[in-house]
Image (cartoon, rainbow, N blue to C red; front, side):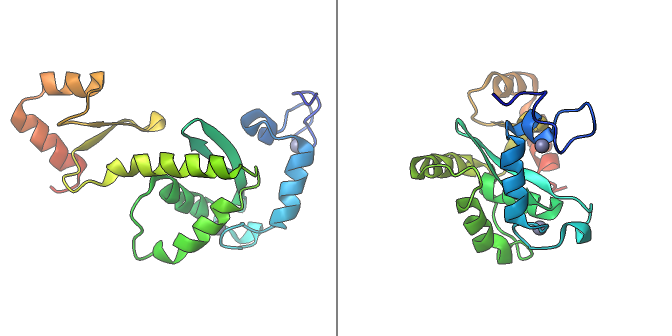
Length: 181
Ligand SMILES: [Zn+2]
Ligand SMILES: [Zn+2]
């Protein structure tokens, strides 16, 4: 069984590989992923050493009860994929990547089943509520991506905020968060 002592080939002496700690990926799997990427970001195909940080990161999809490794990306493409995963509207600079991002998603290294891909899409679609016109959303805990809709969320956080903010304060907060100041 792969464990913290066996999965060490890509780590400093005495350490466990990051790919195993964070993604449960064995060293053999990681070597296969490295071979697939062949030293380039798998989305924009930039050589690893020519990327901004000079390093590629393991990209994964997580959400709706799913978790799968997708591939190796540069930082910029990693944020392109988070756009894909959150169903953020594609702007002029990201639009050229829309189809490529999709193709890359569908070629996920973790080989999800068709059902799982559909499940992922349902999850992505369910996040689309980020982009309603009035933008009455508040990112309460960015690391957890907990979003409450100030005017109607039934969550405790939303209820608390409604209780404690006056109508005017609430509107002001929404303005501030929407950058409409
Ligand atoms: Zn390793
Ligand atoms: Zn890239």
